Length: 73
Image 1 (spheres, rainbow, N blue to C red):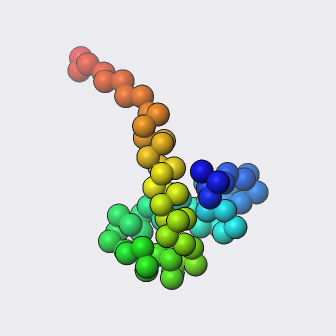
Image 2: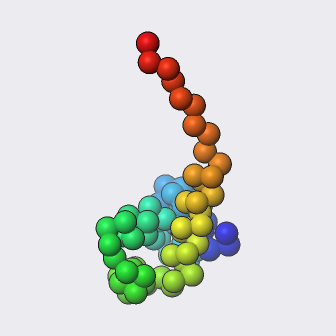
């Protein structure tokens, strides 16, 4: 996870790819919107490894998430 950093002085502390101001959520949203790795790399001037790191970062967040189901009243 050396490619993803959180710095309160960059994008208000949102996780971004190191050396850029490109937030992880923008990368993931671009993928979800149908952009290819190549298009994202060209548009945001990042590498495929940066994209993979963003996916890994999100995967770890979801994996650590706890779900508590509430019963209907």
